[in-house]
Amino acid sequence: MSSYNHVAILGHLGRDPNYRLIGTADSQVCVLSIATSERWTDRSGNEHERTEWHCVKIWGRAAAACDKHLEKGSQVLVTGSLRTESWEDKEGIKRYRTIIVADPRGGVRFVGRPKAERTERTDRAPSESDEWPEGRIDDLGDDIAF
Image (cartoon, rainbow, N blue to C red; front, side):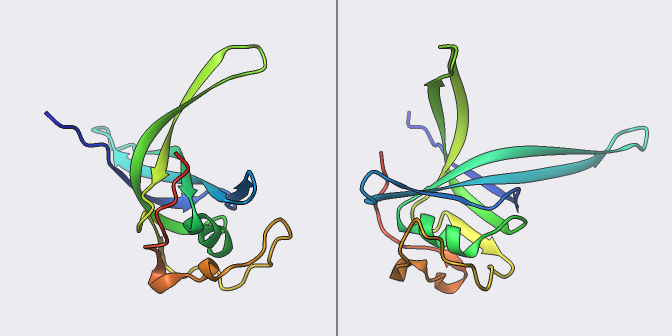
């Protein structure tokens, strides 16, 4: 029997994108912190709200486009798959976290208007991939760093 690893979230960025070049600038990654919330009323009529925070990684040329066009508060729809990362902390304890790796083809879509202008950062040169194509990050290449 086969399996299926797919997730979709619609939420708002809790902070500006964290864009990095890895190695000799061949690999690009953008990390987003996205909040999703749900509201409900219990049987007693009390209203409740729960917010979940999600770490989303976007690889390749789509990472630069996300960095340029998204900002804290932007609403985005992300589709991708779940991955578990592990590392050792300063005390040598192995830690784990589950992240979402955005689908490289159309895995990040903005809802509403993207940021109109953003000051170019000095840690990277602008490229043709910085264009925001038709309201979504779509079909920007196959380069995933794993």
